[in-house]
Length: 384
Image 1 (cartoon, rainbow, N blue to C red):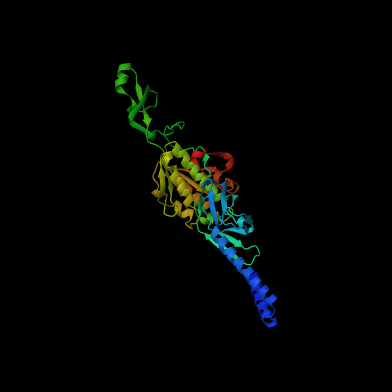
Image 2 (cartoon, rainbow, N blue to C red):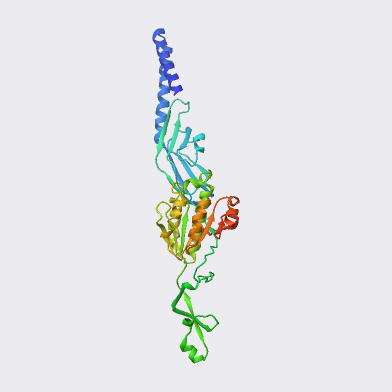
């Protein structure tokens, strides 16, 4: 802008001086000077119509902490070189383009690759872009806008874990721990009577033939059901300035859900805002629904966990409630003790520093798992 004003003033002064002096050479210099400015203007307008950019990414879905790369191709379709070209990226992901300028030969392309790491899950957009072009003398500047955007999905990490459920069926290597889950319509085997066996289990026809008592062992058909309560009270994450506890919570939820789905255990995530079931699944094919939930839920609510836990009456009996939280105080622990005494199994996954609550937890009959990266293994890619 300063160059334009200076040149305009210089042109006016030169023209006025030529008029008053009346010299032909001065008039010639003024005309040449004006023609030089006109050529620069026509050049920059031509270049603007001849420059294009093409932006691509090699993958649009990554996991938190992975490096993502995208490639920008600068295309010059003009028979003139481009002396000063700058790309401006207006997305919040990367600002390095703002300080880089390039030179582009006629009818040539130039590829520029950018790499960066995203540390928080979510859906991100790269762009829009602007191309800033200047003439060789810096007199004129034009901006060409490109409104397209690239979409990136950043998924939480998923880990291979074992969840110790108190009541569950025989699923793979999971052991039966509760006779209440037996299916009395399906006999798995017969065995000799042992002292203490129920008379109702005696197989009378076989016992009559063998002339000794045999009892029936039944198949396990009912299964444990898991309800996950993911604490999203923003006040509990007030000290989480880097978003580490938030990401650990999402990783924990997905890892638990993956374990349950792999073993055919029904698992549900409770909506922290309404107390209703937000997503439910039973097979690993349902895991993508839990991933979508992890991308939609963040600690933005002011609904206290204490009030939420008082709604436990809406949770069915004979299920395991898993609470994922970074915050436990005496009031919350009191509510959890009440919940534990109502014949509902309870497991707490604590995603904060355990030093502050270890003494409190040791005095209570509540199972607490301190979530940490040292205690889990990274999941295979097909589940991540």
